[in-house]
View 1 (spheres, helix red, strand yellow):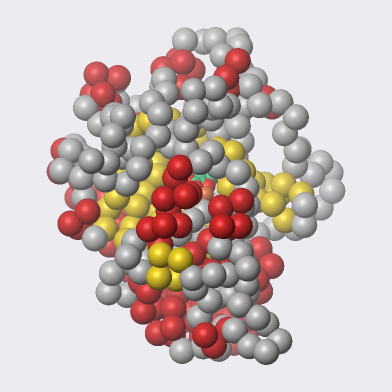
View 2 (cartoon, rainbow, N blue to C red; view 1 turned 180 degrees about the vertical axis):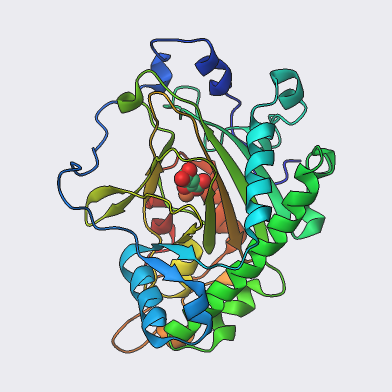
Length: 348
Ligand SMILES: O=C(O)CCC(=O)C(=O)O
Ligand SMILES: [Fe+2]
């Protein structure tokens, strides 16, 4: 039985990109993308939040966090407290792992029944457009959902560093969710209760090879994340993440010591739409590869989520129906990525 859904198997674009091709196969061509705003206009930038200030109960910083989650759904977090040498090690290990020769990668490839491992996600029909990326998808927490085929077989030091990273990022997630509740002026437990005891964490290591036709391919189609909170670590210098703000695609320029953090659909539901999960996408570079590590956090599949009662008022009716996280994810993983369309299944 499949552990968490399936995705049709697709070829490795890492291997394709190595062949010095000048044109990509037709199925990867996605012309007519909305372009980002021209760079001669001054672009608004994703807010930067300082966790040190947040933890010292600094009111302006809390207001900045609140504003970022309402208006952007995204922020960069500095002074996050995660050991910089752990981050450097994780980046180096992932870079090495994603560049393993195909014979080694095959050991970790997805199967028709199991979407964890190397491959792609959201491929549900033979003729849909494909993304210019190889990814590695893995459930990391709680420990008992770990796939025996993957984590235990990681080479060292990746295995130990990932173990620490997973734990550190989970801790950070809980800290941020607690601060969000304070910013929303609700009891921290109203949000923390969903993730404190039984938080589930998964990761998607994204590898975007260079591409001879960057304007006509997409690394990751516009989408919002299904979970509560995503914590993204940019592994190398190449830019590519863009988020949709007031109808325009705005490039995110990751600061070297920051995480890029975003609100997912589940948190939008829990906060009754006050904190927004925002559409984003990943574009491709002509010459340079790009690598990112997205870590997703959500309540367990059996939990029912709906707007938390204190954020449903006479001025603000409930915007979403209640749904189990499992049912939400079943829908999310059974279709092509398409902006924020998945949230429509619970919209009132
Ligand atoms: O590579 C990126 O910057 C975006 C990754 C992302 O949005 C995801 O994995 O959900
Ligand atoms: Fe995402």
